[in-house]
Image 1 (tube, helix red, strand yellow):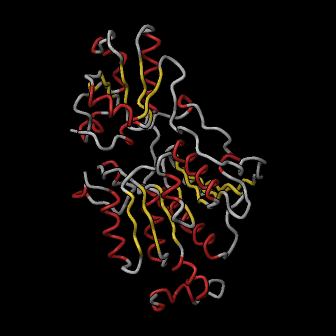
Image 2: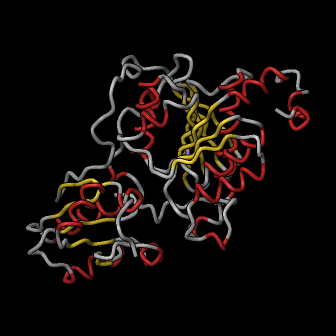
Image 3: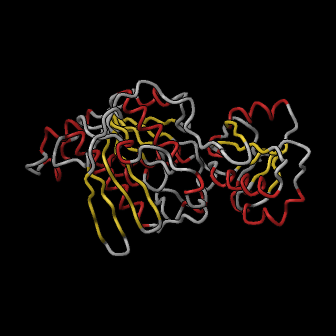
Length: 356
């Protein structure tokens, strides 16, 4: 460890060499290399965290660039993890950087998280947050939470020093119908930087013991009013006694259809000629899509129902599984005899299959 590199923080009497040593020995896993993950990783790497793992299987897209500031125009289509690791290595060659080119799932979450001391959740969906929480409870690992919406952000620390878990404040996953369409749920570019850096700060506090971590406290940030508010919440008995993961953390259709996992769809596509309806936007579809998919954006679905063959099973896919469920509800209401199957997890989870 090059002490000269970190002299401006080790000279802080509240921090010192002992805290720096703790950082250098720490292993932090960041789930997501997007708007929150990029600033958090940049500062944790610069501050001297010894090992950083990055979990993500996404590629850089043009719509990422306004907020995910480590990626450049000439990297559109490239792996986020690969791109980010190159820059983090150039920033601090002493860091042990571990790529996980995958999305977190019930199959890999426990194995991946077990190797780290702290998890920073920089994901952008509820299934992953509940999966991270449950895995961290089982493995007794603290995790730092962050979330975004429009001009606002949230930060908290869960499962730390016998404190509350994510389920203590959000006991159950919301119904997909209660979640805004991911096309409409935008975010101002600078807000992820603010929230991601606040998450990085909480990770540093958890590792070093300085200050007071946001355990049992839910920080709300409003960028338009530049207002910070903290809500206290208590541990709920039983939420820290989880012993195994659920079979699935994906949204399931309850109206007008059933659901399959992306892995199941992949296997079926290798064997059968399926009717797959892709309800993402034109830009998302053009970036990459299944060769077999019929493209009908959700916004145009009602006017293009005749393009669907109702004598066959209808598999509906979007980016994460939320819009596809809404599409199924729409089709089911207008064509009640249709056989509808939602692809839970969407294109985010479709790995290992031919894309165009």
